[in-house]
Image 1: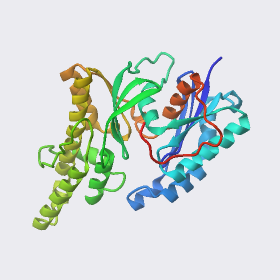
Image 2: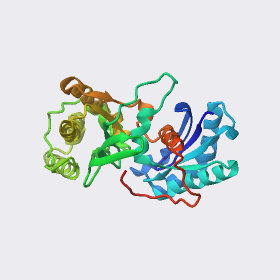
Image 3: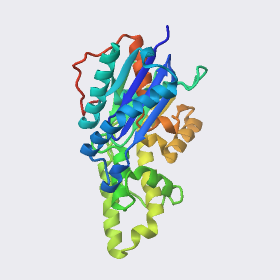
Image 4: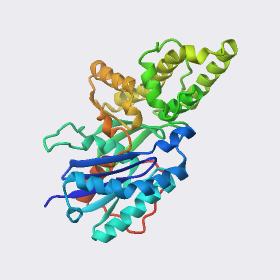
Length: 339
């Protein structure tokens, strides 16, 4: 008998729903929120209100595109955390009501684990691109920068993580001070492709082990702008491509340095990247370069699976369903957690 999972993702500012049957994606619908652009960042109250407006039509569209009836669903998988509490409450509450109305089980999903397992989404039954266990995964997003040793679907160990800011946060905040808008990461990436990555030098942290730190880089970037703007008020406008290229190059160097060390120490050649920053073309190029130089077998997600999406929630739910790992109706969301 086939297993059909409805996934619901509402951890930040994207409302998403997906249907996966026996590991194969039948639909993946995402509604983004443009309302935050005017504020230079996600406004939690506005995000949760937008989720309330979006969730019913998004779920209905996911079921429709999957070509199934809701009576065929085996379970509802929902993001329980981490994320914005108001946003998570909308998805959690809807999942409870929906599961209760169909009398099917609920499966709670850790958002970070879901990003890692996005590599196991199949778009056709023949897909076989998934990593082999154990593998290392570099999870990089606006809120997280972690190196995870993945031993199995249900066995992940964080061996390194940021002690302050995340890589995506560094991109967004540096973009903001340059007046590049929000979200800043994609803009930095686009301008970096036209700039010189060696034009400016920013400080790199010296943190022991596999942990990351990006606060020093951010401070170094701000001080550079402060000093140069005193000499030339048009400094940013004249140099924004080189600034973006140098910033991006420094972030990628910091990320890859620790990942390379972990891969060598643990003797693991199977290496994946996940999360919103995995859409960055410079980081993707660095992975391909490391594959050639160090004999890594690299796994880079499709752009559609880099950002927050419900297909990654549904595929994680599929594996938890096989383990009969269900959650009670009184489960409450959580805003912070590690894997």
